[in-house]
Length: 253
Image (cartoon, rainbow, N blue to C red; front, side, top):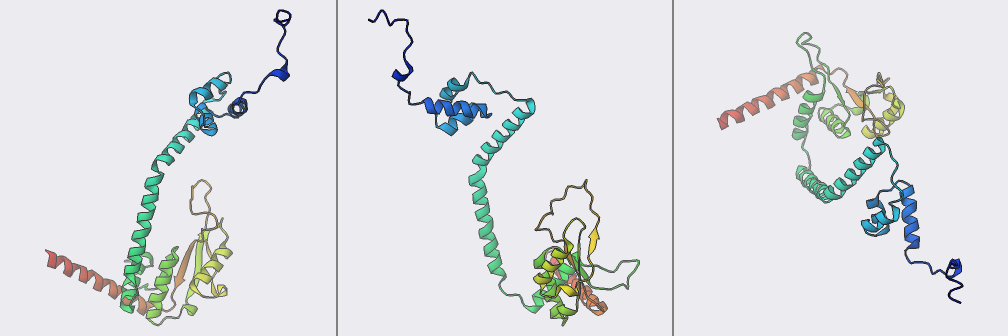
């Protein structure tokens, strides 16, 4: 009987499936999808040598650009894994320091607001030029809502009413100027209807800009009418600050 069956193939129904046949089929499918041996090993929780044996008959068919992208992606994942704990610690340290310093500020007196507001204006506001020394008008522009609120409180400390100030936004023409204007109006607590026509910056497609999308709301321009005397006051505050700094330096010397 055995001699008669020697050359006959074993019937398929008598074969017992091997435990790793399913894993091997998945490995082949991953390889056909472009996965590397290390990626297959990691995905299936098998050794790299086993993964190689299962897919060595299926070499990756990729161009030099594809290979470069694959290597770059692998390097990126390795770098992220390596540095993620340090990034988390850095972010936690930053948040803790931010909270500590914010708590230190506490309440601001009118004197502090005036000093801070004067410095902010001298950095970001319009100033009289040597060729126009008597053109003294208070106009402030900035994209930071916190700095805008500081400046408005600074103005209010001098008795200015934010409802009678003149507002307009300066924004790229590719953005939604009306939506940005309404956002700023709500931010500073005045009706959007009192805003003046926006200043639109010409869009240059060749310029790579990162301040795009929904978070981009341009800059708010705050203009104070009949503000020559207020300008002189700011000018005087800055002169006093400069004199105080000179006195400190002289004491240290």
